[in-house]
Length: 631
Image (cartoon, rainbow, N blue to C red):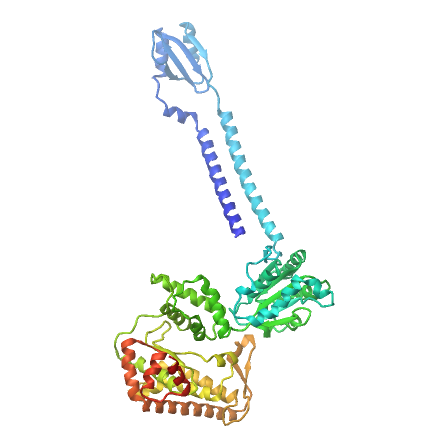
């Protein structure tokens, strides 16, 4: 911001200087205007020709003549004349006029006019000199600014905050209690250094925060500085790396030099994987400049010179690509995992962000936290902000449940579009989505239904059946074989319902994403999870190399014969689940027709209402019955 302000001020001064120069130039040009031009603007006097002047002199009618050799003119005063003298243009050499004047005893005076040419010439020269001086001054000033930037090219771009507090404390960071407990010791090290050093304890030099994006790593680092009441430096790893050799290393040295001058203090390096990737592997387009910068960072953290009182906190979501020398004790002594918040953590995060929001009294943050598993703190903050925007757009005073629901759907699924008109397409979408919703309600191990709707969304989504993910499965990642099988059946419920109602020839491409998800789950069951007839074998290894696209690529470790068996097992699982889905749809066809009529009328059915309707026709699983009884 300061640089932009200086540039704007410099441009303003330059524009004013040029305007002033142009003004002076115009004034000089006006001053240097020839006298003949000025004379033309004045009132023309009475004139005589040279011949008429000679005749008047011979006739004794001339009383006096005043000659101006500068303008080559003469002012003639006639006898008994009270008007303005006549003006006569006279030749430079006029002996005949002088002879006649002596004969007639006429008063003849030579009176040269004032010569301003020298003053005009001097003024014009001064204007030109001033313009040249101004141009040279502007060029020198620009050159000085460029040299200053060159001298500061290797300086650190860290945003330095000298306040005793960053304005953020641990109480402002919710949902990551385990990480806060780990960093509480760092705060104690910074505030009570002597208590640890007196018994021989060494202050940790670095803490690495590892976690998905949006979990609060940067906010947590600011909270550590705020709790310890120490200066706070923050810089991104990408700001160290430049195309010029030596610049990154120079910025590292400058950053740590500033930190030592203000010790004890805290340095926060965000996205450290931009500069701390493994050396010599070529991963991520490695280059010598990045490696030189990393070497300088390693030296500053634990090299020949100590950094007493300076603690480095770095953040990354890719710890697997960091150089091993950077992760060893003495540099980053601790690695703190900042995971996605659990249900209680999400509730606390929503409480923090709801302080500045006007919520309706019937809004339950606990229920909202239950409906948002897998969302990070940044996503939860964005959720409440989107709800507030929708409230203002609808000209309401407080945020209601409808705004919360619409904001959640917009963030997780897409922007709501205009409802479809009554048509075959709308009816087909209704049967497809109800196939998912009904099987999610009838199967024992699927996640409970949140709602089913046929209101289209951006991205080509004609409707959706939304589930509430099981908290235990999301947090632990331990999905059972029965859960996977039931979810494959539920995922194929849309295609199965289309086939049972409209026939195999009328199925649409709406199940394209469902089939891809089923194929992925079935293949993982066979090749990774050991949940097939091939036995407890890991036939594929997830490849985490960056230049191959991360976990999206798998490395095969089997023969062609095993590959054929894998394909057979995957196809068998998918076909069996599809057959089970069609059986359940066939047995509950009357219920589906009633639900379709209701969905076409309401366009959205909430999960609680849906379970009540299904319970009137069939026996629900135990978990679903408990949810109905709890309403």
